[in-house]
Image 1 (cartoon, one colour):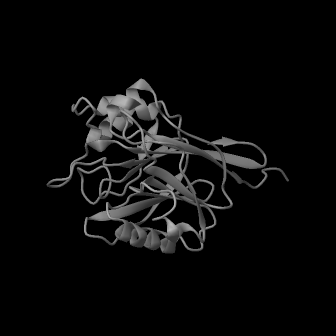
Image 2: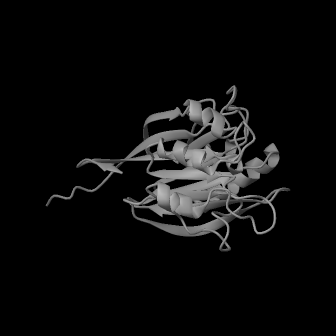
Length: 238
């Protein structure tokens, strides 16, 4: 997190890592870690970070994150083998203070959920992977928006699974601006912006983009997206 006297800027990234399975069909967590390191992010929301069966062991090993990145894993898992919850995980740079917050149960035919963390500076980040059916996505976004009601600085990050820009995101319209940094799926030939952010309106977007590096184009079927959000901070003087 970089600071000036008046503002602080937070780079948030979101990445569906497809259980670390790349377009060559190999599971390569080291490749995913390299992509994450290249994002220069303060906070990273991950989707499909755990495998789907049994106890849902981490597809991206916690030890690898600890040894090969400058991130800490926000403690949201229900067991000792998963990295996150419903495949969602959050990484926070070691230089930034944070505290985990209650998970958010989401409705739908598929098992879905959202996790959240409160970051130094009072920003609440919710990481999620929404369902495949639009009517359930709307209900899921309604639950998330209600959970964030009253939050002065909040960001929702993740795979929204919404192919359209003009529908499906209506529950966010009252309190959030939706940001689509660019086409992030499919990594081999990006045609749609499934990966998005939504932020309260007192957070200003100063930059945003999609990592289209050769490595990112091989590491998963989604490309990672990122956004720089700026907000006022109290002066340390006086």
